[in-house]
Image 1 (cartoon, one colour):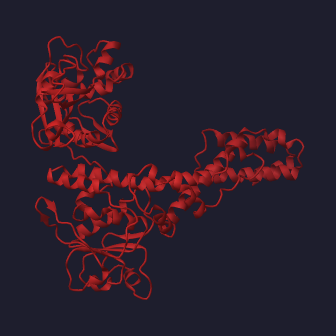
Image 2: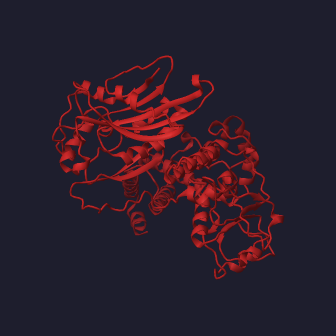
Image 3: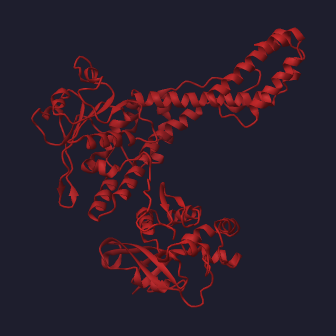
Length: 562
């Protein structure tokens, strides 16, 4: 019986094969060293990443000395997910480290965070769950980060991001994470760093010994994103439905107990379809004093495509005819879990009915993602930080929206003319028109099923999306971008053509027409700031002047004047 070191990623051994590690004397020296040694940046943060599993048959297997205590210490025996850390002494005879005895990091770091070469820190994410396929009926595995840095909060936060994903996808996921960490800038005291991993960017400031006690600067992890989990926690089980309503640009009213809840909920709903732009109107906090009050509350026409966040009880009666109403109350707990609101029929919406709920007749096109709901609810029970829950939510919504948009992008790319059809002497070819039926025909072999496991009526969802302002806004934007790309290609092709040779057998009228058209294109490119290759516009301007200089002096004077 015992624990088995199932996998270990130790780039330090590869690094030491290339060169003996030397002390880093400065940030500049660190950068030079990073560029000369493989996996140097990874090794400035971690010594290795270990995966340890408990196996009744194989017993204890030790791949490297450092793993002996790692195997012993990373099985707390707790059911569920557990995080903890430990410290262990380096085995005698182990060579090399990113950090030297008197390296620049330790000289500038606070005493409590200086590196001690005699010890390692281990940061563990342990999972123990029931599994009938395993003897004794339990799956037990730990993901361990081994480092010389005592950054307990950073590495535990990192584990909260990567460990759940690793337990689902195993080694490929871990290898990708290690490659991402190898792109991080080395820790230098006093610097603020952005550390991207698995779609999340952790922003951290490395403490310096010159920092004043208690004077840690305020860090803003994002300039625009809300705490999605906090906003959605009372209707997590209906998140799929709300995503569909946002995608389709449906009229929605959010009735909340406070302006804070109202505004945060509306903004969170709008952001749920990112990276797709929400093209309808939305009012995070709407009152009877808004200039559009009469327009949005009239009953003589269908409700507009808008999301309104309100708190005034007066609106309960005013918006009874709206197709989708989210009524929120104060957050209540049901044991360890936030009480989930129920979906109710619109007919049950009464003026005096103050019960929270989602009042709608919307029938979902896609099935609920029960695995996400289960993962989030378990996270609540296990006291998983709200930031991590929000990251899980945001990533799920991002992947869902991308799965929906990718087939549209792929079809749109097929409407683009071939590059070889762009010639210097003709107007750029037109983009083929978007055909809904032609697009539907591509879904069988290139639909969302390639990137999403969700089942349902994807075709019906697309058909309704085509009637929404979000499709119109998306298509207009993408069509403009494609048109600009064609213009850029045409300018580049013209730039490579022999303009002067073309003019030799052409009449003055044709040459003047060419000059005027080229000048118009150059002005348009400058005004729209088209992303043409560097030097193309300057080169074309030079060609233009050469062509003008080949004309009679009277024409040159006229063309230079205008």
